[in-house]
Amino acid sequence: MIAVMALALSALTSVQAQETPSQEGLKPVKYVFLFIGDGMSSPQRQMCDNYLTAIGQPGMLMNSFPVKSPTTTWSANKLVTDSAASGTAIACGEKTNNGRIGMDASGTRKLESSAYVAKKTGKKVGILTSVTLNHATPASFYGNQDDRGKYYLLGLDLLKSGFDFFGGGAIDKHNDKKYKKYVDDVYKNTLSAGKDFKGDIYELAEDFGYKVVHDADDILDLEPGDSKIIACQKEGSLPYAINHEKGLRLDQYLAKAIEMLDGKDGFFIMCEGGKIDWVGHANDAGSVLNESIALDKAVKVAYDFYEKHPDETLIIVTGDHETGGLTLGFAGEGIQANYKLLQHQTCSRDKFRDEIYRIEHKKDLTFDEVKPLIEKSFGFKFDGPKDDPMTVTEEELNLLLKGFEKDKKDYHNRALAPVVFKIFDKKVGLSWTTGSHTALPVITSAVGVNADFFKGNLDNTDISKKLKAIFQAK
Ligand SMILES: [Zn+2]
Image 1 (spheres, rainbow, N blue to C red):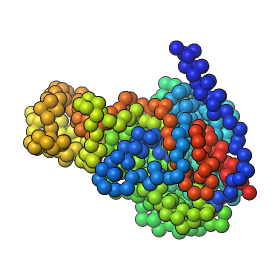
Image 2 (tube, rainbow, N blue to C red):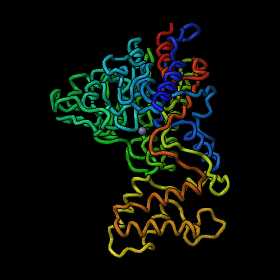
Image 3 (spheres, rainbow, N blue to C red):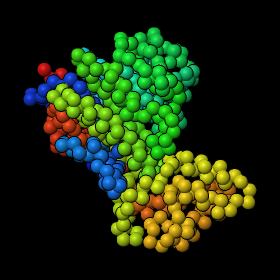
Image 4 (cartoon, protein in one colour):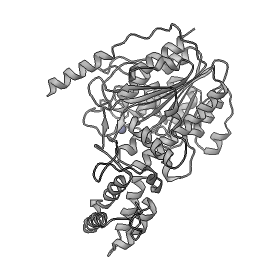
């Protein structure tokens, strides 16, 4: 089995062993945007189109681009990549092992990202994400660490990069005196605790010429100037789009980055929708929808800019891998699909689960007391007309009651929330095969100057190779 897998991987990897593409025929481009949907492959993008057209809106802007190319994502050591290896492939153009950031498969040779090439040619560089700034995908553009869990060291790499604008979620573990990595059996931490601790990253930033801004109003008030900027939340990632909590959104960060970085040599901006992956892991369709649409709103900001500068702008949108094994269509009761129903989901899986959990602490709780939360969060109707798709059938009610009884015995079981999600998925017409990533190729779409250069079957490493060639085009 392992031999077969190794053979399959070597056959796959031999396909992507391309030379750096020729710069012949390439035009220099002043403004380049690269969007990455973490965990966003074709099913996620198609689901959004299904939903948007069902509610009478145009589909996803990113899906309307003239170039759309299937893009393979495997890593050097696994058929199914993680965000570190795929981020490194997209950023640096070389396959590496899962867990590595900007390093080769052995973890010893540093790789150079397209962002550094852009910077060398005089462009300003912006790195934006809805998750934390030293998470795997953004870190792959500025960092070089053998283990994605070395957040503190990636924070130092961020400062050393000299890139012009960082925006979005916080710098994770910015003051981690021990910079303990997250627990992972595969990548053991080789650092001795605290050995290289140099101080809080936010405080060190000034020594590296950065101004750090956390307050939302202060971020919106920033004006172009000489200083390099870290505009981010103090802690954590941006709120889930579906929960409508307060805080700046990814498209607002991007609009600010454009304003700050525009200048005579132009810019390269990488903008990641990082939480599509998180909610994909949770098999949370409504949140995948909302996070993907939030990324598309940021794409719209770039597209509006492109329309003002059509001869100077290139926009690329890709994903780093698929998450959840999302399948569109549910064959259980005939192939039914009603994506409009996704509008009834009003909160993320995390939030729903926490709210249920809170209620279930109550003694002598009845199912009637839980119903309003299910109705509010998913639009279920317990006494609705038979022909209304949101009306709970007898079979569904039995499943819900079973989950509820299990939780009543011990609320740690957390059995009810997954049942609600399963029923909701069935009503919408979708399903999931895993809580992890899959090897399904992603889609890379492009519009603008040199967009045709991204036509055809791509591997994720091609994106970096092609962008580097574009940045060096004369
Ligand atoms: Zn993931």
